[in-house]
Each structure stands twice: as structure tokens, then as C-alpha cells.
Amino acid sequence: MGCCAPGRHGLDQSAASRAPSAMGRQRAIRGYFTEQPICKEVLLQRSSSMADSIMSRAATMEIPINSNGDSRTIPEDDGLEQAAKAQWSLDEKVGSATETRDLQQVMVSGPNLNETSIVSGGYGGTAEGIIPTSSIKGPNMHQAGTAEEATRGVAVEKLDFVRKWGLNTYKCTKQMISERFGRGSRTVDLELEAQIEVLRDTKRKYENVLRLARALTNHFYSMVQTQHALGDTFADLSQKSPELRDEFGYNAETQKLLCKNGETLLGAINFFVSSINTLVNKTMEDTLLTIKKYEDARLEYDAYRADLEELNLGPRDAVTMARIEAAQQQYQVQKDKYERLRNDVTIKLKFLEENKVKVMHKQLLLFHNAISAYFAGNQQQLEQTLKQFNIKLKPPGADKPSWLEEQ
Image (cartoon, rainbow, N blue to C red):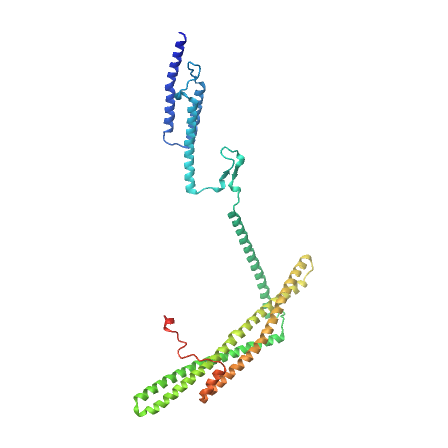
């Protein structure tokens, strides 16, 4: 018993002597973590060396035994636990610094979605559950690809259209120059060409009639306004000249009657001018537009016909036969277009002639009856002529806009 007591006392002294050294190590670790933040590489190097020294000391450390044979729990001397805590705290500090730096980078440059990964399988899962998002094609990427393909298709169509247009323009220009210099042949429909020339000559003459009728309308309108002013002047003088009251009164009434009949005649002439204008600038012009399309189709037809004839005169190899077949198809297309427009022109010329005769018969009769009644002084016949052709006269000042419209 006596010899065992000193042993226990010596063991207690050794444990007590080791306690300050453990406390010193803890203070050193705490001071280490309270220092100013340093770079990530230095922290990692220091943490590695610190952990190795602590683990080596903990491995060679004596384990104190109490009187009952159990190991005593000394919080200040638990080296393994303190080393683990130190390593965990150091990793947290390094991780927080890294996360702060990454967060700053994301705030400046934005997240890099191509390097983002989706982890499946929970915390601590294997690498098999990591799915890189760069391999996932979302609907936006699909839509962008579809839009790019559509844009490329439109560009290809436009390029093909421009190529065909350029080729067609070249062939037609070549054919037109050949015809002007008498080197090329052209398709001619003698009967149709004669009708087209008659229509153009008729249009020129009707345009002259329209120009003269408008001039007559302007001059006659000026005369009517002069008669109206003259009648007002005579009426005023009849009131201020008692000795010439009757004479001024007769002339005032005559001028007012002429002015009224003149306004009636102006209504008939305006109707005549409007009908001629519709016939010349709408009906005939529409037919001439169809004729213009027909002439363009004729030129294209002759251009492709000449191209086909030239190919037929050349050698008959495989490449030339393919070109001849393609030229034959284009020639047939142009031929069908030419024949269709030729039929349209023939029909329109026929209808135009019938419409022209009907319209001019009515307008010429109106013009003759109105002019005859006016200069004969037959007011009743003049009014009857307007009723016969359903012409309604506008009241004086109807063409002038109201003060609301002027505002």
C-alpha cells in the first residue's frame, strides 16, 4: 500500500505538468484562428502542418489511469478531439473565404451555367449522381436552333430567287437587243397587234377630248361666275338709279337666268368629263396593263425559245442533254404563260370595245342635248336632259368645305 501511494502521486504530478502544455496548445490554436485573414494557399499549408504535429503528439501522449483502472477524462488534454475540432474549424474558415471570393466573382461576371452540376443521391453520394448541366439542352436552345435554321432557309430562298431573276433578266435583255438590231426572231400575232395599236391610238384621242372638255368646263365656269357678278351689279344699280331702274332690272334678271342655266349646263359637262375620265384612265388603262404583261411574257417566251434552239444546235452529250431537258421545261412554262395572257388580252379588248361604245353613246347624247338646250334658251329642255341621265345638281357652295372642316 505504501509503495503504491507514491506511484499515484507521481502520476498525478505528471498529468498536472502536462496540463499547462495542452492549454498552451489550445491558446495557440485560438490565436492562430483570430489572426488576420490570409490567402487560401497559406491557410491550407499551415493547417496541414498543424494537424500533422498535433496528431503526432496525440499518438505519443500517455493515457492517465485512475484508481479504478479507467482512463480519466481530462477536457484540456483530449488531443485527438482538439485536433479534429481544429481541422474542422480551419476547413470552415478556408471554405468561407473561398465561398466569399466565388460569390464576389459571380456578382461581377455572372454565374457560369455551363460548369454548373446537379448532384443526385443526397449528401455524400457518389460521382455517378453528378449531372453536368452543359449536357442538358433546354427549350430555349431548341427554339434558338429552330430560328437559326428558319433564317438560313429564308436566306437560301432569297439567294435562289435573286439567281433566277438575274438569269431571266439576262436572257430577256439579250433577246430584246437581238430584236432591235434585227438579229433575233420574235413571235407576232398580227391581228392582236393591230387591235392593240388601235386601242393606243384611241386612248390618245380620248385623252385629247378629255383635256378639251376640262378646258371648256373651266372657261364656262368663269363665264357663269362673271354673269353672276354682273347680275348682282345690275340689281344694285337698279336700286340706286331711279331713272334707269327698269333697264337695269331687265338685264339683272337676264343675267341671273343665264347664270342658273349655266350652272345646269356645268352639271351636265362635269358628268361628261367624269365619265370620259373613268373610261380613259381606268378602263383603258387596266387593259393596257394587261397588254404590258402580255408583251413581257412574249419577250420571255422568245428568249427561252431562242435558248432552247441554241442548245439543240450544239453537241448531244450527257451534260448537254440535261441542259436541253431543263430548257425544254422552262420553255413550256413560258409558252403556257404567254398563251394565257394572250387570251386575257383578247377578251379584255372585246369587252373594252363594247363598254366604250355604250358609254360614249350615252355621254355624246347628253352633251349634245345639254349644249343645244342651253344656247336655245330652253330651260325646260335643259332640265329634262339632266333628269333623263339621272344627273343631280349640287347646291351652290357644296364643293366648299364647312368651317368645321377648315378648322
